[in-house]
Structures are given as C-alpha cells and as structure tokens.
Length: 276
Image (cartoon, rainbow, N blue to C red):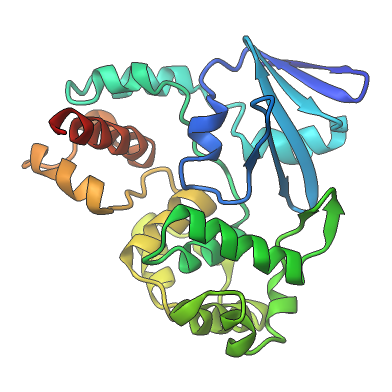
C-alpha cells in the first residue's frame, strides 16, 4: 500500500481487495451513506469521512495525514493482505467462484462500543430499520460533526437516560437492553479491553453475560467490533449453508472464519436467487 497527499485528500494505491459497497453496506456497519457519485460518507470516532474508489485508487476526501494514519488505516484494515486471504478461501470448492464474484469484501475494525450497541439494536430487525434507529440515536444524543453527520454517543451520555428515552427512538423491546448496556459500560462492569485480550471462547462467554446479548449478537460483535476474525455469526442464511459442511468448516477457513462467513452469505443468497 502506498499513499500520498493531494491538496486536502489522501490518495491510496495498492489496495485491490476493497469494494466499498460490499464492505460498507453489507450489514456490518450501519452509518455509511452512499452518495450520488458512488462515494460513501460516514463518521468514525467523531471524525467525518467521504471515501471513493477510482480505478485502483482510494480517495479519502478532506482527510488529514494524522487522521488517515490514526483512524482510517486501521478501520479499513488497509495493511492486511486480503488478496492472500481470498486465494486461501478459494481452496474451498463451494465458494471458489463466489470469492471472485464478490471480491472486495473486507471486515472493518469498528469501535467496540458502537458495534456492540448497534448489534444489540439489530436483533430481529431489518437493515433499513436498524439504520433509522441508529441515526435517530446519533442525531439526538451525539455531537454534530458536519453536514448532518453526528458522532455515535458515548456510553456515559446514554447512561443518564431511561428505557423510555430509547423507546422514543423506536427501539421497541431492545430499549431496555441498550439502557442497561450503556450503564454497565459507563460504570465499568463491562471491560472492552479485557474482552479483547481473551481467547475467543472466553471472550464470547463474557459477551453472553451481558443483558440482551445472545449468540448471534455476541459473534457479530466479536467479529466486527473486537477484532476476532475467527468469529462466525450464524443467521438464517448461514444455517442453510452449514448443511454443505457436515464434517465442519474446511481447514482453509481456520482463523479467518469470519471473513469466509461473508462470502458464504453471498453464496447462499445467490443460490436462493437461482432457485427462484
């Protein structure tokens, strides 16, 4: 990967395996907005970004070198060799062609708090509604950064609220989960650094202790918010896939099962369309 400044932008070359739409609008993050020019706008850690793919270049608009190096390299995992990972996944005959067809899916390194809170909200919910709830949460309790984009509110701010405040945002039964989660994180009962330091099975146990967190939410948070690339969230699509692996997942998925899961999801969706 090479990068350089061009006026107020950062231009990145040499990142082949990154499709912005597949990565930013696949259900692992909920606050990126696609623009008319096919760029995406969003906010991470209170910093706004507009990002666009132009051929083999990534353009980070109006971004300082400091923010690029301190936030965006890690967030987009730009130093990980996804080309090598994809070649390894293609050893599995089931998704070999799917890796080529949907080449460019990348796991984001999201903030643990935002990711966990978002997936608690996501339970029994569709993506459009999840995005709407989270947008209202940020617009109401976050800080405006620019042009209608807000920061994700920190747990200390949300800990001062009651369940009824979250119900007003349309969270339904999830409101009580978010209210307790914010209080437990703000009060130190939930230690994100500790969870990240544990082996994956122990980290999962810690997340499952949290009020309102079940197996799927725990695995989504582990994969998308805590850096556990071997976490393997199971939804209705992945349940259908697992019948093709009666002896368990193949060896080539070891330690990157979460990345494989993304391609398995698209494979399952593609098979469903073929049946129709």
